[in-house]
Length: 193
Image 1: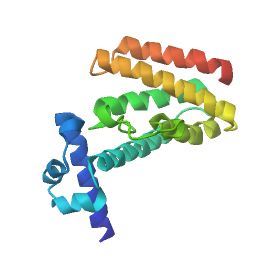
Image 2: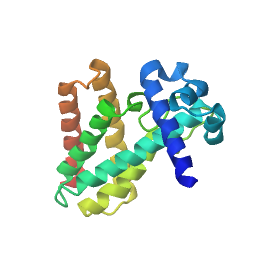
Image 3: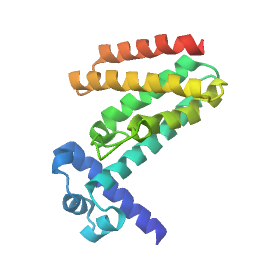
Image 4: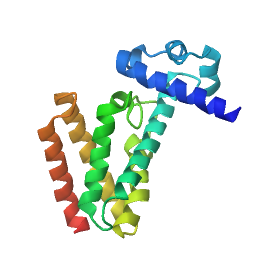
């Protein structure tokens, strides 16, 4: 029974992702997701109260998959090679942006303000938490507040630059991606070299 429920949830999230690519967030509805997933509307509401909750669950799944992909890539990067590790983090994000349904709009969270928010509510803090779980051990570093701040600045800079790259070209402008990589390497060199 649990496997059937997990399969149904996966179908609902897959349908949500496909519809995000086709019609966007504003037009997304729980009814359309249920129809695409081939499940009763009650099944959607069993998991999610509204489309925002569904998109948030998709974002969490994206972040989990991103962390899995980074972990697999780090296994091929020599320990201590921070440039290789940063490239793996960047390359996996770009690959997901290009290939994962719904990722272009939602990636790791829905960018819709809801009430009062603190810095820790920000989507990029979820990413920073995962990266500071994954990278320091691979690089032989201690995850302290200074390293977390450095990762925060790198993630925020990369996020802004990659948004620009994917606005300029739906596949990601290669020159802007190259510049993003150069900015990250130059910024992180002062801490990690």
